[in-house]
Image 1: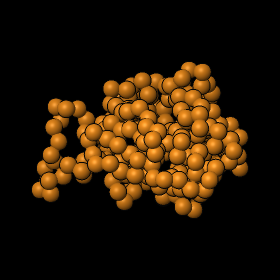
Image 2 (image 1 turned 30 degrees about the vertical axis):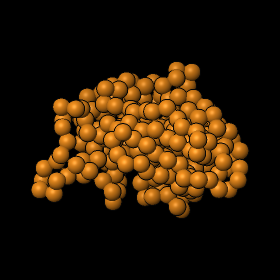
Image 3 (image 1 turned 45 degrees about the vertical axis):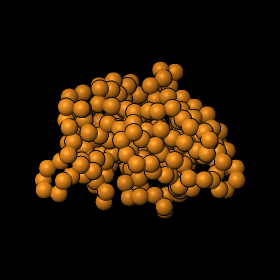
Length: 233
């Protein structure tokens, strides 16, 4: 993804970013979409940014990519934008993101007390799988300021297994149905495979409660997606 973002930044055009998975057919991302401004963002993202502005303080933008969310916020708020790609960090700085860093969310060199932790474009994906949920919430405790919030979106993939008669064609013995593997490729640059997690809202709410967090659904999107706000109980 970093290679695709860097090429678009420097040339104004890019090929499609290929999204590969052992579980689904190949998909594509239009790289220009990663450079969208506020007016071209879906409702879920616009609402998340509005909530961050209303809350104020210091925002941590996780998996910031080309920095579109950070750029939409930093005129009013202090924003730290992180991504694991050094190319994304470079592009964000070129685009004017004031505090862009190449670092993993779970790297304990990342320190701070953040009033909003922003995790968009299926933010639950960064958790990887359900087994990591408790560790994820522990990390959130370490990073959230008193009274802070997590704004995170996801989708319920259950619809993909719908037989149309009220039954679903997935095997629960194989684990949670929202656990996916992905791999990104841009031209001849292919990244490593990684785990990605989609979580239905009821499951997120239950797991959050078990880890000491309140969870409310803020917006429900048109494609089984939603925005949730989490905070410590």
